[in-house]
Image (cartoon, rainbow, N blue to C red; front, side, top):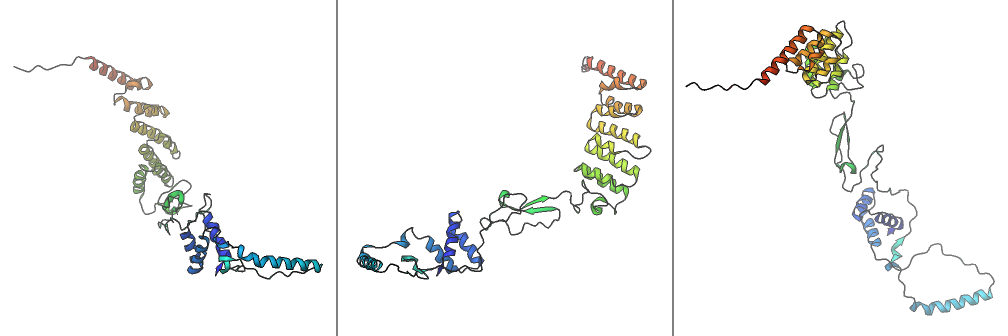
Length: 323
């Protein structure tokens, strides 16, 4: 016996484009019997109109007399109470269908993947994602959806306490295990931060800030600025009696590392600024001669510039072979 509600349910989702194989597996997994589902599928797959065909001609010889009798009764009796049957049954091939009363079990609709980024994505059993995308790392968001091609994606969560990096928004109070290097000496801490600066200077810069010793912290800032080739990192050097001189030296080192003499212009100390310019003079960059304040160093710069010009104008001397 096939339940009408089951037939209607299957027909609804066939019309929505769901494969019958998916609907069958879904209903069986939900608790319906395989035979019951197969019978329902066979019923809805019958050609339209096959289940309600009637041959009226043979029945006319019975219908006409009945109509005459009913007409006579209606004429003789003013009011006839017609009692309707308590239950009616469809004809033809529908005789095997029982319109069952509603059951306590509701058949849920197949789950459709959501496109809203704020709604968790639930995969349908059609071309499904892996059952578990967990990579075992607490600092990644693991998910899979149609948008990822039904493949697992492991998106880093930042900041995340526990990934070994002291990130923006973290400090030694909120994430001690990332922002405190208790097992290393100060020298080793600085060396470890220098290595980190080559790959993630912003994190290395943050790591410098948690060093308690001011001199070591300032040295750390200077190292990160040079490795990252970013002179603005020198501005982190603010504390300590020699903070200004360390900052000017930091500018000078960055200028030399990136070969940009205009960074020397940021140095307020004339002596350190002239030393910064002289690094470029020694590299044959004489465009800085007029910027040098110290007269002796400026004179040396111009002399070297003139010598360089004279040598450039000298004809090339070709040595003759000795006979």
